Length: 203
Image (cartoon, rainbow, N blue to C red; front, top):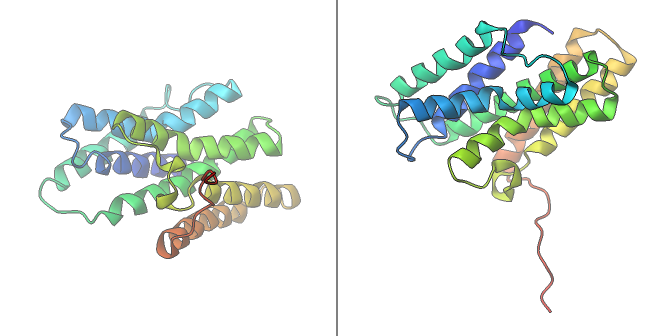
């Protein structure tokens, strides 16, 4: 897997963490905590499940690719107003990049197809879950009004696992799968697509 994928995923994840701090009256340190948790949280849980070295502990590039965009975004939004949709867009790209990076690493580490898909979902959404818990909100993955979320990673990871089975080591499968996650997420945001909401029938 090209290293730039994880670098870009962490950068976009960190940016979404900074944008999520809007209106919470959090200082720079708190914003950086949110950014780093969003950027590395999912991958950390994935690596712990796979019992492999955590991907950022011996790679300063990961921390730099998370911290520098976070600080830059923190400075920029103090002078330029960002549309609320910017956070959703950054998060959508983060889902696509992290979801397939997690699935691919799981496969390379010897996980079976089902486990790889589940770990792809964990990599994609866990950082956002931790971010939302820290800022005192219901995680996006549990909120119907934020439309299809983890479901998009499931379909993208499923496509990747299928393509890898039939055409192993074909690089295009990685990018097609990322594209599917991003497309599904953007379509869900545009058309308001979501899974059925749990409601108990009135007596």
